Structures are given as structure tokens and as C-alpha cells.
Figure (tube, helix red, strand yellow):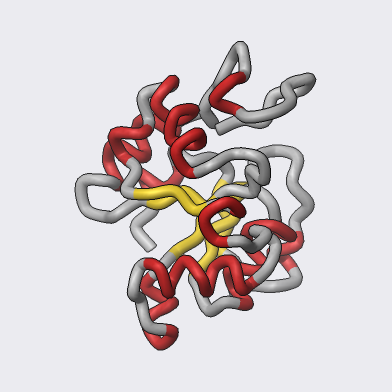
Amino acid sequence: MQDLPGQQGKMCNWRQVKTVDGAYQVLEKLSQQHAIYIATNAADSSAQEIEQAFARVGLSQFISGYFCHANLGLNKSSPAFYQAILTKLKIPAELAKTVTMIGDSYDKDIAPAIAAGLNATWLQGDSATKISEKNNRIKTIPSLKALLTDTT
């Protein structure tokens, strides 16, 4: 989902909701073989309201669940957020590497996910800082659609 300039409050109530380019195709394909969960920093929305926003753009059909401050009591920028997700999904810590976080924020998505033991893929796009050059453990992609052609 895209954070649109000037939009405030709960995304499910925004006048316009937009997806990241390629989201529909990627989620449709990946959900055929993987459980897809959304981890969001939306502090003022419940999991149900987040699902409503995804439903508005036809993506909720591919999503197995939603994790946010409302149902975890933690902020996404904390490794504890991701550890709580593993606990809710009944995934033991030693299997954390079987979970991959795909996100566009190094500080809120990638760094805390890695600190929690997960794999991480950084959706960098055109404007992201190339922190991955300093940390080669981080896989980077230029767009979501790159996940459909990636064989590694």
C-alpha cells in the first residue's frame, strides 16, 4: 500500500487508496505457495480496519492475516514486534529464517526484522539509500515485480 501525501487517519477511510506497483500480481502468485501476512506501522488502525483498506484494492483475498500495534502492542521498528509475530504464528525462534520480511524502510522493516532473526528483502525503488552496500546480508529488489523473476 502507498502512503499518499495529505492523507491522515485510518487508511480504510482515505478517499483514495493505492497499491505499490505490482502488488496484485506478486501477491496473487506468492499466495499460491506461501502464507502472506501484513506487518504494518499503522498505529491508529485495528487489524480489521487494515484488512478493509486492502479489500478496497482487491488485495485482502491474498492475505492470511494482519499484524499491527493494535493486536501486538508493539511498534514495528522494534525487533520485539517481529518476535511477537513469530510467537502468534507458532514459529519457533530457530525457524525464524523461514520467514521473510519484505519492506521499503530500512529502519522500520529491514533492521528490526534481521535483529529478530528473520530474512529480509528491501524494496528500494529509486530513492532509497543504498545501506545494503554496507550490509551484504540484505537482499534488495528495485520493485515488487522483481520477486516474480528472482530465482535465488
